[in-house]
Image (cartoon, rainbow, N blue to C red; front, side, top):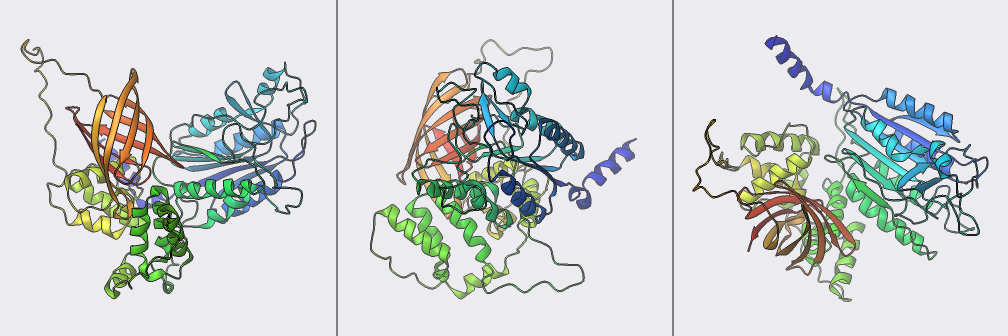
Length: 535
C-alpha cells in the first residue's frame, strides 16, 4: 500500500501531469434582445475575445444571442468540461442588472417587466455569483471572469421607477482563486461607443482589453492597472466617468499569453537587439504602481541605455510631472557594457527561475511550498521572510529574476532560522498558576515599518492602528517618500489581511503577526516586502 501511495505521489509530481491542465473559456455576447432595448457591439466583443483567447491556447465555447435555455445549456457544457487544476475564463457582454445586492446576466428572451416583478427577473436570469460558484465547484485552480454588462438598466422607466439599480452592476465577493473584472465601477455606466461618430468595432472597454491578451510579459494585475487608467482617460474625452473595477482573490500570478517554446530539433530563434526589452514594460508598470519619484529614478537608472525606448521616455515625463519640474533632466550616463552583458545572459524562462528559487527557499527552511514556478502568496511570504532575515535582498517583485535567484543561492543554511515555539503543557498537566496568561493579540497602537519594493526602492514610515470592533481595525499610513493613505484591516489569529488606499492606488496586504505580538511581516500587491515593529 505504501508503495502504491508513493507511486501516485511521484506521478502527480511529473511535469507532464502539471502541464496537462487545460485552459477553457466561456464567451457569451447578447445583442438581439426580444423585449428590452437591443445592443450593438456585444456580439462583436464576444467574437473578438473568442479569437484572441483561441490564439493563446484556450478551448472556447462561444454563444451569441443566447436565450435563458441556451445560456444554461452552454454553462452546463462548460462546467462539465472543467476538471481540477484547470484555468477557466468567463466573458459576458450584454445587459445586466443588480437586484438586492446580486448581479444578474440577462438572456435575450428576458421579458420587459414592471417594478414589482423583480423576483421573476431573478428566476429568468443568470446570477453571476451562482455561475462563479458552479465554476469553482469543479476544482479549477484559476478563474478569470470579465463582465462587460454595466450598461443602462433595461428595466428603468421614465418615471424613475425600475427593477434594480438604475445603471451598472454592484460590488461582488469573488470566490477564492477568482479574479472578476467589471468594465465599469459599481453603479457606473459602461460605454458601447464614445459618441455617434465613433466607428470602433468594440466597446470602449473591450477595444483596450484585447491588445493586452497577447502580451506574454504582462501579468494580470499590472494589466488591470494600465487598462483601468486608459479606459478612464478615453471615457473622459466625452466627459463620461468609467473606471473598470476588479475583485482579486487570485492565488499566484496569471498571464493570458505564454511565450511559445522552441520546436524540438530546431535551433532557437536569435534574440533581438534588445534582449532585456521584455522586462522594460514590466518594470515600468511596477514603477508606476509605486508612484514615487524614487521609483521612476530607479527605473530610469536601470534603463539608462534605452533612452530611445518609448516606455523610458514616458517614465521620464511622468517622473518630471510628479516632481513638479518642467525642465528636461540631465542626460543619463551610458550603462556599463558589462551590465548589459549580464542582462543579456539572464535566462528568459521566468517560471523556471521561480521554480529554482522556490527549491532553494525550501532548502533554507523558508517554506515556499511546492516548486511549481508560480509566485503565489506562500512563495512571496517565504521570500519576504528571507529578505527580513538577510541584507541586500531585492524586493518581492524581483521574484522570477536572476537577481532573486542569485540572492537565495548565495545564502547559507541559517537564512530562515526556525523560531522556537513556547512549550505546551504536558498531557494531563496544567500551566502553573504563577505563569502569566497569554495576552490577546492586538494591532492597536503605533508601529514603525520598513519596506523593500521593486526596483530596489526602500521606504520607512509609520502605521497607526485603531480597533473598530472585534478583529476589524482601521489604520493610517505615512512614509518618508511622501505617501499617505488609510487601510481597512482584519486580524484573524496572527494572520493580517488589509486593503490599503492611497491616492490613485489600492493595494492588498497579507502578513503574519509574530507570536509575541510585537512585530509582523508580509507582502503587498504593489511589490513591497514589509517588516513592522510596535513602537
